Image (cartoon, rainbow, N blue to C red; front, side):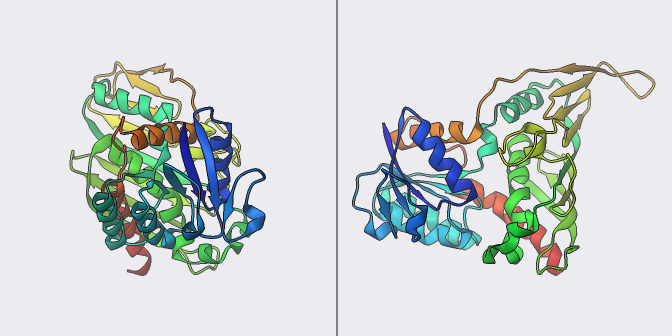
Length: 326
């Protein structure tokens, strides 16, 4: 039984809470939140991590990004392993502070890029790595959704930290790194269309060290069916459209995601490619991530995304954000 604290009970924190409570191998040891109304019946509640007086093996940090580094450092000093929501930190320097604190205290940090635990993402990675589509050359990704206006009533979401670059596109960049390796070049454009102090719409081109070129279009101001959450049905808050939002082209064919439709059999444009849909098992990525965290806590596995790996994703995101102020 893995005993977990939970700090933060917002949109993602509430999902973590419910999954921990429902899991037979996990125990919610306590909730850390300054608002007592956000505590849970039958679960010890604390206003701060310093007040926690129960035994725990790890902590899930689902708090605003700026608090990640100080909370992770405090947790590490208490001997707690950490599952921290993305982004790992607000700056690259703070991400390294977190990594060093974990090293110094002999604990591990897992960063919540939970899409790596999605069965369809894992199957996509297998298809790409298998050579089925040949050597990947190019890809096109869309994340185009419209967040409701009241989403931005939370103060920290009103500025750059609430833009879809750091809140949503960061997941896509991490997934692309999982598929293609490290990003070597970034170029992009961004603009505000909702008359706000943050970019809400833009595009970028990423080049990876394997030579793959990926174009990305992103916006949280347009109600389309194209985006990871809509296509996969991963989020209980977003209707499941089952539409593909990522297409990868290789030297021998192509694959669409999340349908996992592989196009092959054509040597050139005069020949017709044929589609084959690949199957993937079911599974809730947040639950699978918590199960992986339990393995990390027990020393049975290394973190699939640790603080330094997540910092490389953050570096790409910060460069995309720079296009807003450039």
